Image (tube, rainbow, N blue to C red; front, side, top):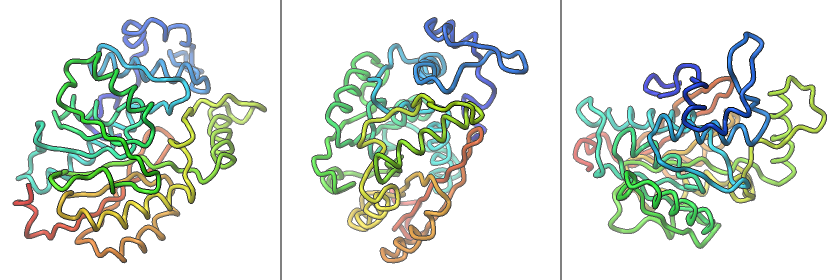
Length: 302
């Protein structure tokens, strides 16, 4: 994990339970005799991440419907910390902080985890877009319950599921970067198979009918063509907003997807492309980033 990640060390389960007592019902002993939780149980995973948000990020309340994707907070935080390092490269060696740093979170979901972490860690402001109005409504309730987030997040509904940036980015917008955790399955069958595999891995392959602990409504997890098609749309649309965004970025779940995505990037001719490796626990992923801003203009961009 990134060295600035608040969850770099082992979870302090006793502190998290003190913050959210409901989590205590799911605490068990590991083989080494340490407190842990059963990560194959969706309710335990959700409560753990709620406890992290309340304890480590100081929110008063944070909740979301059971059918929505439960974000692993440490992994989400890593994305933001790595992007802070990217911005520092063109900011005299210092991470830019404050509301004047604006970020677009494509697919903010029902939890607004990126805007929450970005606001708490760096004071940044966000625009969160989503095609699900129910998800945006839930984020609005989170904002109402947490005055410290006021002024740090604006919500925009994407009415066209075939678009990513079009209909969201306004002429006057100036985003330091966009970020996205794209839907990575091409079909419901693919999503179920992937979830079953992940859950069996958590249980050492012993479960015949594992519970689906990686929740998520259809549009959070699935889109036609899967992750590659979604990111290709983002890449193609990005050239139309070259003056509005410094860095376009997205997570890419599979290393094997990069070859075709690099090919799509060549067609829009960005000034620079970066691939940043990340890892949390046994999971590895990467950030794909590109910019149309020439190096000679970057210090003056904002």
